[in-house]
Length: 533
Ligand SMILES: [Zn+2]
Image 1 (cartoon, rainbow, N blue to C red):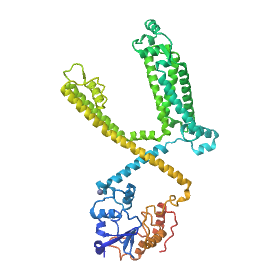
Image 2: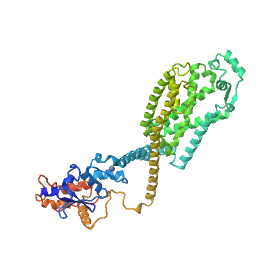
Image 3: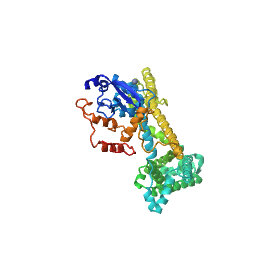
């Protein structure tokens, strides 16, 4: 009997569609769900002499072809998620997907990762008080309202107004910074002759070290910022200081406050602004030696970091955040770009150095030639160094041409990453809008929560299947890995007659209880009655 079953055709009923194959074909992948089929399997129905799977038959032809030919080819339109679920259901290893068809699955995995990282960065990053904290304390509730207003720009009308004001002040403070170095926005405090006098006779190194041919230095020493600009700047500093203090004092987790780059930057800026402000009030007193002058210049230059305050916009414009995320995702490509660029610049610099070895003034060292190589490869070409000999020109051509190729390729990947993140983010937002409208008309569909008996997509039931489903519904076997059903129950009576040698039925007297737990495990919420023995 066992021999006969091995050779002759068997019938597999997948969601109402009957497929025919041989048992020997299925045994080619012994660890898969189909490879383990035997008349003792719970899927076997002795009455109809077929194996029944309550499952969508859409991809089953491809699955069966895998057993026949050893190759798994998938329809190009097929969603990667469906492929993954099919392979998991039939317990087929994913490495069996043919190379030509792995594209859709790979794209699916990629998309999943992208969606996951977008979700994490947008949704899991909010610092807030716990409801329990707020319930007990009026002060905490007050703090929370300030914190939310400062930290969540879209949370209320008040927050929107405050944030708009904040951004306007950032703009103004940057504008004041730019204008304060324009000659026409400064008031004359001393004449050029007076400066010459001080350079010669003053003891302050601020004046003694000035280079009178340098217009920038002369302007800085003979003029001061217009008082209006000065007052606006002071107002901005005060505003940002108060904002920072309020932000910090109301923060629910003070230590976490320092983990945000923008907060640390804000603190740095406030300290630097007050320091430079203090220095400027008594310039001659503080800037009396060269070290202090250098220190002051560095501080002043770093104030341009206030531009980064614009990145608070990220909370409002997700596209800006997407830009950062795609850069982060492209870090490998950027690193590749950096390394190839460095190697190529050393390569061409060395060639150029030796090609122009007999020329006197140009390309004095290999390291200085690297400057030329980088400027040539980025197609900037300042023209401060250029080859004049024939071999040097040949190296120049090769350098410029390879620069274009080296830059173009990794940049394409970075751009592709950006467009992918951008697209996925717009899809996420569309989904968010749809969910909102669904909440409004909640009663429009009955599925969703709680978990479904068959969330796996099923074909319309044939009358015969309907009967089986009713039967299986009673016993709770619709879960993908449930191990028992009614037909297996019938098997129990015929034990020994139908089973091939060495195969034992897994039914035990306690299986009615275990079935119940299987149903619970898979989120099937209907009652599972104990079966009559
Ligand atoms: Zn293929």
